[in-house]
Length: 472
Image 1 (cartoon, one colour):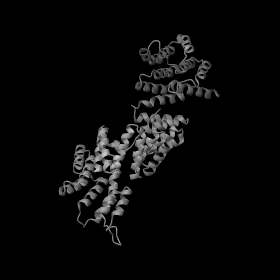
Image 2: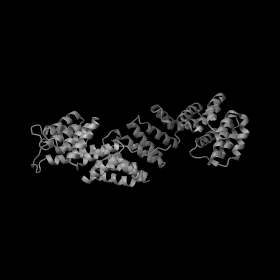
Image 3: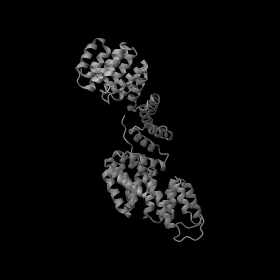
């Protein structure tokens, strides 16, 4: 089963670009430089100069400690607009959005053209799902300062989220003209290039973003996608490993790295990554699907079946799960479960009549001829009378048609289709107790079946299962 490499960033969660919050944290260093004394005294205390401890607290993911340090240091000092904006940003990162809103509004009451306060108030509005207010505030910022790069990048993100790639790139270009190092505009522009499959351009933009912020994990994840698309698997693995070292708790980094390992037939490494991803997020059905594929490739049929069953328990409408699950149940000879899974797969892909025919085969192998008739009826009603599917359906319900069917097999010149027909002939023979005949047909299939045909995998599994059972 083929699944695409996923672009995973927190942009998918809402209108906010993940890079904005990186830029928000980075902006503290600029503000610290503005607020801290230009020539600090020879002897300092944390209370007199808290900025280093604040930066460290934010870097360690403890904004409450930074907020406490700030409030203690300035409790007895008058606050300028710059310090109030800093306070509001700390409140925002600590999740105290209403208090942050109040602080920014206090700044605007004194200076209604304060672009820093307006921009940060727009961030609060976005986090509170006040999207119209957020957009209005961003436009106010750029009306006052047309070169306010963060606001331009935010407007670009909003345009991109609304499906307006042209508008988005206009805003991103304006942001980069004002500040070539604006991480929001770099990441957003890179995503537009990724969507256009301009992978080299996308990778270059993500690289520029990493020059600005070397520890931003999503830039590595996004660049890994571009590198993988350019067949640079080693580069993609390096980027995903770096992202994992920075943020080991983001499950999709492991899933995307596991996909690359699986594509290179490094199943053990892939399974190890999927294991970690599923420990971090036990409800992510795709992780189980990917691990099921990898387990099946290693011969861990029971593990693969368990994973596919977990997929359908989490997401019953994930139609892609049922065909591989049916094939695995066939492999272990559980005709009842295989039949049920084939029928589920047929519900999701009604144009693939092989799925219904394989379900009918399961009933035939169980000796339930009445069920076989019911299962092939939809096929007989939908396919042309001269089609191979029609002939297979007739074979399964009419023993007298076997000679005519074998004649069609002999006349077939398409090797892939002939292999499919031989599979049904083989299974029909097994159901009639003619095991040697069935094995003869199966051995004729080897190497001729189309890789994408369900019958190819089933023929291979059936031959291996019967050889194992006979001790060969």
